[in-house]
Length: 228
Length: 303
Image 1 (tube, each protein chain N blue to C red):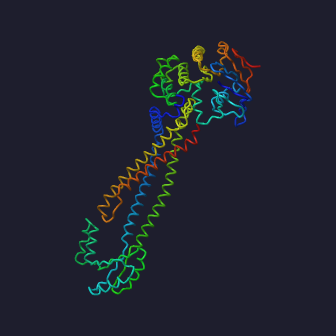
Image 2: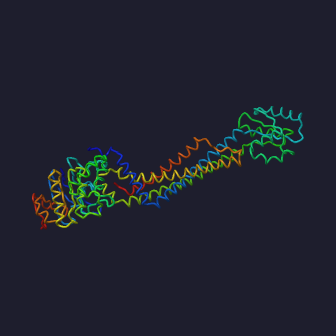
Image 3: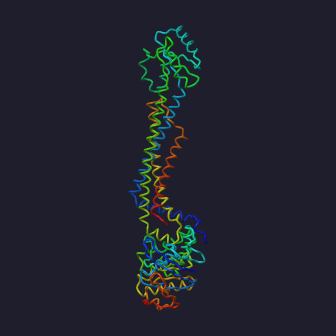
């Protein structure tokens, strides 16, 4: 579903973030992206999300070359990608339900559909009765559930999660990971950047290790370890 | 469903746009108020100068259409002498009509044009100072100066007068009014656009986090930009409406006053002309608002 061919990215200030990287992620996969900070993980996500364009190489998403995409097609690419962040990125003045509804409003969904979809997705993430709470009235784990609900409500092909448990305690982290696994079982591809070694080691999923802008290790049911 | 986002402008989105626009307006209230203020001032100047121009033009036209030569006779000219002068005038090939205006008729005419205030002229009743005169029309307006010069030479004619100079002066004034108002309007419009651009920039800044989230969620450019565009247009429109109120009320009361104290001046009151002036004020208001937002969005909202 995602294919990168010999992709390099050199920023305008001369920083080489990614060099000659090739990567395939298949539909339905669950993959961890690991590596020290500065290894190029964020750039890789930005390249898939078309926030940055590669200096060299090609990026394919769902059979489409995203480099050849017109600017007005980009929003439609992004609707097929659900993003989840370490800092949740919820709108503080909107309730949980409104934050989820916001993702639907943006895509021009009818209010009837919104009324139907929002409670369903909130129930799926385990926030059935918390739709009317503001982010500030919720725990970190609950806020992240809202973030996940917002990411999946538009039925994306892939969820890209950037350290989704980075701000959460171990128990809550596991609850969130179980939620991701549940979503993955329903067929959504998941690519997750993480530093949580115990999670990676326990879940035994594909591990893609980055270092200095290149892939140094790519294993099915891999582990988290310091690269030599 | 796949393409829903690029075509659907549902009620929901529209509600969202208005809500966002008004939230921003309230958040930047002092900037909003000053933007509206400067739009109002510039549009008042636009409206006032347009009204001045159309009125001056109307006045010039009415003077021009009645360009005629008045030849005042010497006081001692009698009936016979008068007929002789009339024949002499008729000899001039440029002349088309001649009308004799007696001094009594002249006073009556004057009274009529003063309307309700004709009491001013009451004291003149006994010793009418107005001379007898011939009112002469020429076949073309251009022939007036030459004909006037020729008439001056006829014996028994005291003085010859025509309105050419008045017309020129009037049109000259209109020209200056127009130039001055274009320059002022241009400067004020620039200031208004700048202030609106600043207001919109503040709104964009206040909501940069939200904009970032919208981009991540796959909002189209116009969806992100529209509330800001709307905010600018609301600022311009509000300024325009206030200006219309001021100009319209001002002009109405001016018409009232002129009718009472200067009854011989006819102000333009065709509703079509006035409506198109008010319409152009609103139009410019909206344009200023849209232009201001557009500048800001281009510079500060790369989506």
